[in-house]
Length: 158
Image (cartoon, rainbow, N blue to C red):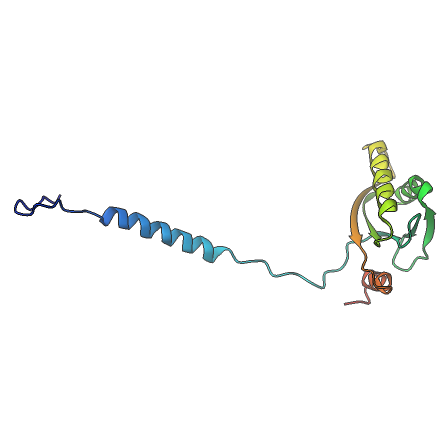
């Protein structure tokens, strides 16, 4: 322990413990900052799509049940039938992607409401019924947006 020099009128300042704490804190902050490496964006991942529903105009939905299947057109009033039809054909979990343009906001709301009603009626022990996982995907205003989405789903687009 240090003692004060009796000849000096000023008290001895002992700043080493405080300086040690400050430098330790700065060191910890630097380590935390250095360890926060951002994840690079991953591109080229295949679309997780089992069923694709596309809405380009308000009031109608095109349903593609497979990458090479022809679309079936459902009016907005028959969206409940759309979910019944696709859930009966397969068991397990199916990924349903709803792609919509800026002209389909009312149909998007109706689609989400119909999906909510459909999932409320599902019974966990019902055999032969698929569980749906819905994801929404906005389409660009470009006329080729649907073609690009279909190409990416079919595996021809990179």
